[in-house]
Amino acid sequence: MKKKPDNSAAAILSRRLDSLLDARKACLKHDDLETVHDLRVATRRMRAALQLFEPFSPEPVREIYLPVRELTREIGQLRNLDEALLFFLDEIGLPGEGKECPDLVKRLRAQRMQEAARVRKQLKGLGLAALKHDLELVAARLPLPESCNGGSRKGATSLAGFLSQSGVALFEDIHHLLPMSVMAEAVEVRHRLRIAIKRWRYFLEIVAELTRIDYATVLETLKEYQTLLGRLNDLSVFAALVREGGLDSREQSRFDSVKDGWSTRLFEDFQELLERKPLRYVFLYQ
Image 1 (cartoon, rainbow, N blue to C red):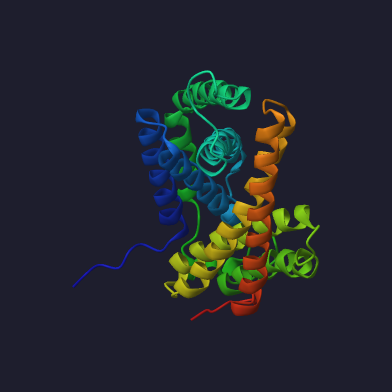
Image 2: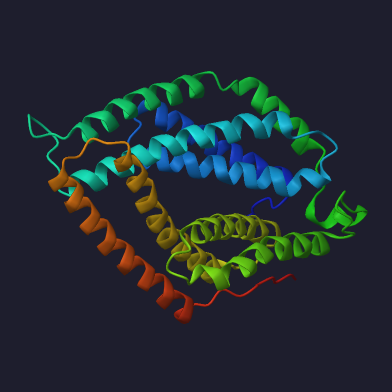
């Protein structure tokens, strides 16, 4: 008989740490677009688990959370530069070599090298022994799902109550942002909506592990929203990089045209997705 996976909070934290360490090792070996993305996701999932279980932990999680958050930020900068170079070379069609190579591309490549060096330094100095020790200390004193009836510092008296309370709070952010997000000029609102959806998605991933309830359909929908809104946000990041200079008037005109075209199409896709797969609060517990 196949053994069921351990669904305790401690086991979930341990799996998150294993994923983070595997991604760290891969990124140190080869920091391409895919490995950078995997490491960024691993840090976010680690942080989501720490934040969720923190109210039940007798041990402080700050010593674990802060270095992981800092790594997320550094990796985010590296990822943005990778995506920008890909966009400017492939979508805009800027030359990547020779005398015709724009100053913007040269600057981004130089920044990418500097950022990659910072990330490698941070990964090597992460303090793995201390991180593992602190996490094991927290995990060892976290309750099993069925033993959470003692309550948390948030006031919930059962695991179901705590998860429901946490889920409602996370979805409220989405609920408040949705009406404004359909306005074409609400770029910042859609950026905040993307973050809120991402947090709810990572929360539901943990709930699925804790409860063994299948959230696959919901998670796939949230990933679809997150990806689409992420691409819209990337265009804003690319525009900010262009404002720093490095393109001639012809290249600038080409960028504006392609960016505006993508913005229009992605915004239309977002509106269509809202109609086809509207975001609704979901919480199941057995």
